[in-house]
Length: 485
Image 1 (cartoon, rainbow, N blue to C red):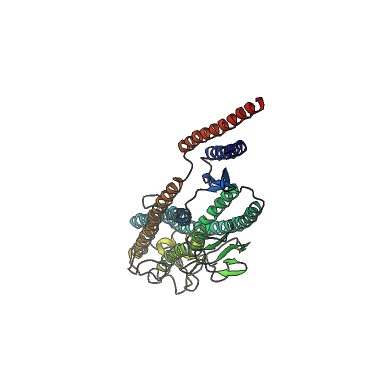
Image 2 (spheres, rainbow, N blue to C red):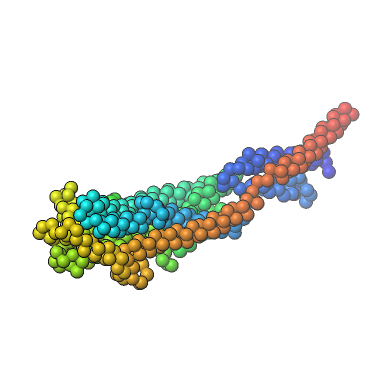
């Protein structure tokens, strides 16, 4: 080998060692950076004149397991959707209240029954009749607040859908721009792993909203599809459309057109069911919350309200009433309308005839809502009948209750059980999805930066640098000798 060839080889070795040291430095400094993929320098032998001519840097590659990354993204979508479901079920359970809570629906029913029992033992005492009125107001108020709470949850979900759709559109545009930047970097022979990191991180964020498939389009450009087959990005990003609604009431649904659905490039897409284009992530779970879970809970509250109103407006219970007269519990002062039950829980209230604050008389609780005058103060017949009607079992006509007959307390207990079971089921699912996601994340991190290994690489790079530097020094000494001859 000539002196010139040796010098050239050593210089390429120094360049490769320098570039390798930069990569190690980048790896170590970004060891804890989210979305950063470990870099490796790609080296190959240079050839010149049929002989070795040193080493060349072919580029910088990112070390990432695409299979594990894909599974992690799917797990992130499932985990995010499960978290949304748990948050709703916990809020729903809090609205109904646990059985031991003094403000729960169960407790309000029990308090009303207790007040009736105490009044029946001393029907002549206005204080006890007043306690019945207060307990009735509390029971109606609990149904009102629970129903209003359900609609607030729907409103919050609708607002969050709007925010997530905006974030999704923005992220897709960023990915399209990064695709272009990566192409320009390749054309200009510039390193672009940092652009790939940015793109991966944004795609990871999108995958929480909608489960996605990433397809390689060549030249490090990617296309994105949902697992349901909807195109998100292929050169140009798709445009998601959604219109938020405020306020939301119990009768408003997507099916009726009162609430917005989701569109992609102006075309409506299914947001629920096995054929949903977005099923499995946070976005689908929010639609499920707004359009299914909360509607079911509202239906159960309305069924309890319907049962309560119908029991107490029956003329067989209170002979002073005629058919069509409102009873102790009313639909905003009116009798029950079987064709207008949606949202009844938010409208149920105590009849003004028994409320002195609204011009009524307490004695009507004892003597009948339609009585012309007070009866015998010691007559507890009607109060005892009201106690009996509370305990009477009746079959539900709506909601998701089981077909068995139930008392008023039975309906309240069943609703508590349903919401508690839903919370338990969704919490168990969240635990599974969280464990799955964390397991895949840990597996993916095995290909991440190990600072101990990077330090070992640095020692080898230092040795290679020293060896090449020694060659240059030797060449210099030889040249000096030649000059001195």
